[in-house]
Amino acid sequence: MSKKGERELIEIERVSFKYSGSNEYALKDLSLSISRPSITAIVGRNGAGKSTLLRLLNGLIPHFYEGEFRGRVLVDGVDTREVDISDLSRKVGLVFQNPEHMFFSETVWDEVIFGPKALGRNDFEELGEKALRLTGLTDMKDYPPWSLSGGEMKRLSIACILSMETDYIALDEPTVGQDAVSRRELIEILRNLRNMGKGIIVVSHDLEWISDLRPDRIIVIRDGYVFVDGGRDLLADVTILARAGLIPPMSAIIGRAIGVRGFGIDDILKEVLG
Ligand SMILES: Nc1ncnc2c1ncn2[C@@H]1O[C@H](COP(=O)(O)OP(=O)(O)OP(=O)(O)O)[C@@H](O)[C@H]1O
Ligand SMILES: [Mg+2]
Image 1 (cartoon, rainbow, N blue to C red):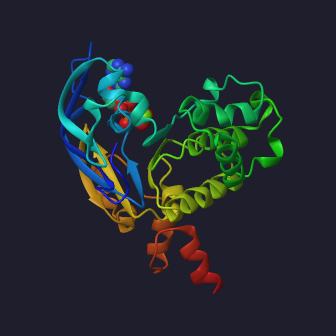
Image 2 (spheres, rainbow, N blue to C red):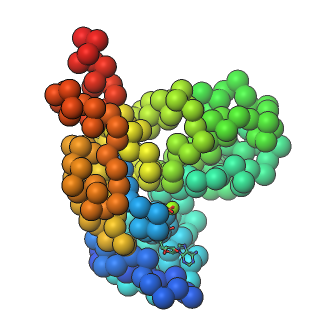
């Protein structure tokens, strides 16, 4: 894979993909590039193609999913078709929506060091400790993963990706089932990772949370293509969001109604409380 300092971006070039057995293309001539460090939020209606897009990034498509694939995806200059999926797993980590179904170790610690050990990293202990520290799970090292709360499990799933030290981390619907505190913690974790230089790509239906996350960029996917690619102010654009079948976050609507510039509850509170 490429060395540091070369092209630090993911380039999706005119990708179309149709799952075998399906009549419709899930992705249609989609082009997109994502540089790092950054946080990119991907939004869109059910079935728009968001999860399919994430599967492109770490090579699950076309390596694992059968179907018709056209175009190409370059991760830091390397064509995902030309490398093993195990090599790609060093570059792009994917946190699935329900990763807790995939825990299989007896302890949190064994779970978090599994990835770096499989990658042959001699420093797996250091990596495991760092990942647990970043996700606030150090004290739960010896717990069985199944005994964790939903929020802790989500953080463990992120820790398992962090311990592999990938440059990009993609997360599919990380806030599902998370309470307000966990949602905030997730924001802190993701901002930290961006500050460490990583490219974060996050798919979410939770526009309120995305607004608080303050991503560098928001990409609206509609029917398998990029409908809009813009900044955070997109969240207040009722017309564009409606055309993509989305409803703006309530904080943006309230903010506009009371004349507050900004799009998240943080902005509104700052304005109102000083
Ligand atoms: N494994 C699969 N086999 C066949 N078709 C699939 C598969 N996964 C997704 N699709 C189809 O591809 C299209 C895009 O699905 P995708 O899961 O990417 O959407 P999404 O934007 O993630 O939706 P959601 O918000 O519901 O998670 C849909 O029409 C879906 O039915
Ligand atoms: Mg999905």
